[in-house]
Amino acid sequence: MNNIDLKGKTVFVTGAAGFIGSNLVLELLKTQSPINIVGIDNMNDYYDISIKEWRLEQIEACDSEHTESKWTFVKGDISDSALINSLFDEYKFDIVVNLAAQAGVRYSITNPEAYMKSNMIGFYNILEACRHSYDNGAKGVEHLVYASSSSVYGSNKKVPYSTDDKVDNPVSLYAATKKSNELMAHAYSKLYNIPSTGLRFFTVYGPAGRPDMAYFGFTNKLIKGETIQIFNFGNCKRDFTYIDDIVEGVKRVMAGAPSREIGEDGLPIPPYAVYNIGNQNPENLLDFVDILQQELIHAEVLPADYDFEAHKELVPMQAGDVPVTFADTSALERDFGFKPSTTLRTGLRKFAQWYKKFYEV
Picture 1 (cartoon, rainbow, N blue to C red):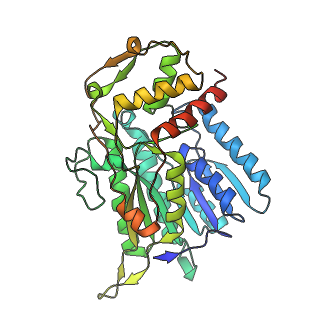
Picture 2: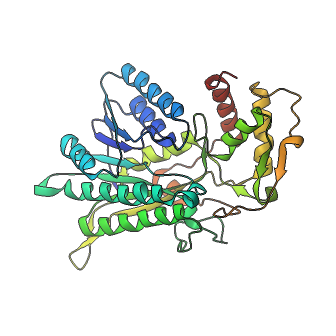
Picture 3: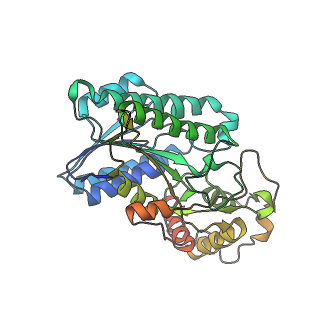
């Protein structure tokens, strides 16, 4: 592994107004200054744009405190190859973290085109720009880190999910695009010696998260007195991973690029790696909802006498969903000395407190 000191580097973060992207930028500004960060986001309205704007405001405030660092935000789309190429030419990125993607399993059933544009063409543009960063003997990109997803495991029966498992049976287009990203990165790592690391994230949650995620959607509905639907009659298990743990994992991985080596054939051995980042502790969906309701009451988002039973409906499994996600994170722990550890109650408490403040409940 090639260790990289992030301080003084120029880092490109795509999806910088997104949940993981914005938290990563904040963490880098706080812990790795001086650092030069360029963020891009298309600010689409897949979910409430005011949350994305709030995240950017947090970054601006943090940036003003760390004057030795530089934060630049570009509103744009990674599927725009001319824009991506011009940014690479201008800033000469040392590290690229590709978090921009059309997220969500269910939305990929109703709007597949968005996934092809962002997840396939957008990622291809990033790979091409990384490839050409070495033109004319330039040092170029030292490490490409990109978001994959636990959804690549599809309906694998073997748990916990290991990065050694075969993942050739996606059950959603979203999962197929993420698996494709890993294949594309492998090809580019082999052909052009680009050090790349894919990260399979497991159900990320926390303050200012994505409103299309269950915990956020449940909260929105409960406040309005609507009924929440719990799929597979509550027999789903999810490896919920708190945002701070995800960001710590990403930051450590950024600083440890796969080593470039030449094989016996005189060609590069692909400097390529994939890791799971999950909590290694799947929670039953009914238990999760129980803790969520306790924390919403604790934060005074909901009244103490709220009748949850009247607002819960157990329903069958949805297309594209899987019954369990469970991360084997032993490789991450082995190579980076880190494994997520935030408890579900701690994470949901922080979410409930943020929700009360943000929505002025």
